Image (cartoon, rainbow, N blue to C red; front, side, top):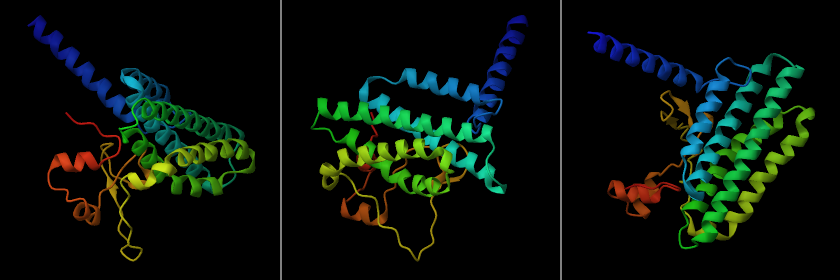
Length: 232
C-alpha cells in the first residue's frame, strides 16, 4: 500500500508540474511563471544536438520572443507604455535579436558544412517569411525609445534574407494567397488555437497549388516539402 501511495504521490506531483509548465508557456516578462518558462526553454535548447537542430531551436525561441513583444505592446493599447513596460518590450526584442542571430549563424554554418542539403537555408527562409509581416506591423507601433533595438531586429531579418536570396529559386515557395478569400490559418501546435501570425513558432504551409505542382501524395512527400523537418 505504501508503494502504491508513493507512486500515486509522484504521479500527482508530475501531473501538477506538467500543468504548471503548460500554463507557463503563455507567460510574459514580469509574470510569475516567466522564469519557469525560460528555464524550460533553456533545458530544451540543451537537448538540441548539432548546428542544424540547435539553429532551428534558436529560431523557435526568436519566434517566442517576438510574440511576447507583440503581446506586451497589446497591453499598452490604452495609453503610453510606462518605464517598466518599455523595459520588458526591450528585453523581449533584444532576446529575439540574439536568438534569431544565433539561429542564423548556426544554420548558415550547417549549410556551409553540407552545401548539398538545403534544409538549413529552408528553415531560415521559412522563419523570415513567417515573421516579416508581423515584425513590420509591430515595428510601426514601437515608441521612439525602442528605435535602437528595432533597428537591430530589422538588421537580423535583412542578414537572413541576404543569405537566402541566392538560393531562393531552389527553395519551396509559400502558396499564393487569395486576397478575396479572407481565409485564416489556425494553428493548434501549442495546444490552443492561434492564428498563424500569432503562433510563436516557425510555421510552413503547403497549399493545394503546391501539392499539385510537386505531386505530393504520401506523408513522406509532405515531410520532404517542409523546411527544416527531419523524419525517421
